[in-house]
Length: 372
Image (cartoon, rainbow, N blue to C red; front, side, top):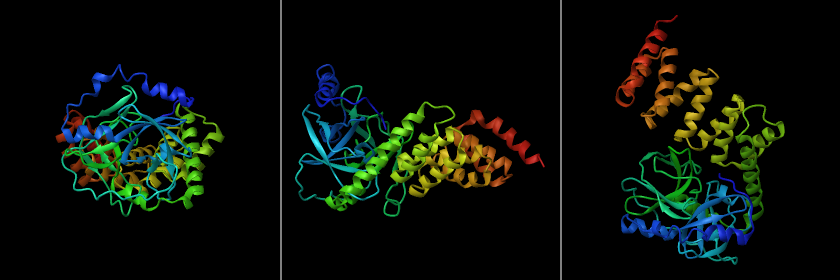
């Protein structure tokens, strides 16, 4: 979540349009025609708290992230042709980190999207770029992992496709330009995508009867995010009120991204029990999340709970075997627990992906296996 200073509606419009001419040359598209066409399907979204992205799914409906919408009643939308309009959230009660925005206040029938086909090739993000003040197509990446979305409605597609702050809510397409999901979050290396199939779940569960609960949850999301932002620059001795707010509101938000961030925040501040509580919850929501799994493994490692860390590392070795941090943790866990099978697995993967670290890992494991 990327916060910015609140401003008036007219200042927002100025921010959105001031660079339009300066960046006109960057709008030329050098990709496949069906991918370039998706640039017009993306919008910039300004809330009182941030700039994000959205994806147009029909003439009057835009989908973005639930954590972008929070509890706001309207938004400023910038289209790829420079048009500025207002949009209004449609309340729903489905737990995925998605929400619909309508360009009309009056209710009308929402049509479900066609079922997506199998993903073809690499995938890429198309989203609103704050630096360019224009829509942008980012470098592609591969799909790393995903879970059963029927069983885990908060799960994501995990990918190495590139993105930047402000891209949340943008389109994610395959090599044929087919929409496969909506960008949700990431750490700069592995990004998370909500699959297009869950947009239909949002449509099916959108109704005015959910309005009160929708805005209540939105307030939890906003309060959680505000307190996480306050805690971001704190190195130790977090104010007890901020700590309690994160513990309460982030948990109550039931938002996977915020639950991840809360776990990472408590871990960084040394509260390992609260860190484990949030990160273990995150894994229950999305068992194949590399970012959450790694955060949980590190938390177990610091607290010396290596028996709990072991299955987490084994899963990470399947999902991201090339990750040097996973391999290093794996070597330590395998050696200390004297797990010869895991030792062989880690060393084999190091031989393939991280030869430079192999001699030191072998030395550590040999010493660990010899120790009483």
